[in-house]
Image 1 (cartoon, each protein chain N blue to C red):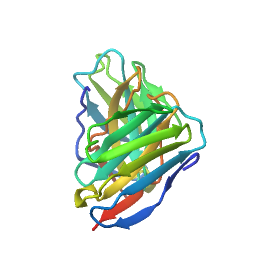
Image 2 (cartoon, rainbow over the protein chains, first blue to last red):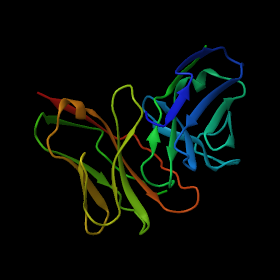
Image 3 (cartoon, chains in turn brown, purple):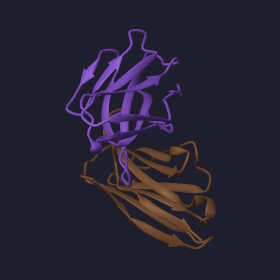
Image 4 (cartoon, each protein chain N blue to C red):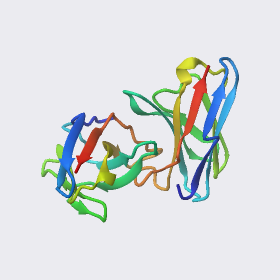
Length: 112
Length: 111
């Protein structure tokens, strides 16, 4: 997707290990979001950011932390991965926070 | 956050119009109506949004009821590439706005 990159695209990790997913944008948008998607649940918001060092929790934030030290990068960290965190993670950006979200291609995380 | 209700699935024939309904009876005056779609194995993509008036763009049209308690996404000529999950979402302006996705409508398009 133009202007937004997620890394890695795929990751397999063991239970109890820390994991960091990266979202990088080149659009200079103020708002960035992390969602997870699981079968039967649609997309659920984990955390979001409305500026550098300004973040807030979404509906499923337990077990996750985020950081945004510069406009272009939004990091999602699983401090101690659990099998319930096996999911596809999507990052999104928005200039206004309301219109026209642009999503990344997703990171498929498997915790074994 | 105000909620939306969509059918779980719909089917359409190729090259026919498709009307995807969405109910949002608790919509507030500042809520915009957004539509996104998610193609298989991809992230969601923006389709259209509106507040009170009907909206058209190259992808689709959005018809909003006069009382704003329902809306319809219209694909004028469905193609096989339009097979996706379509999400109807409410979101308003304000500090740190965020969109809450439901489970959407899975659209199947057949020849």
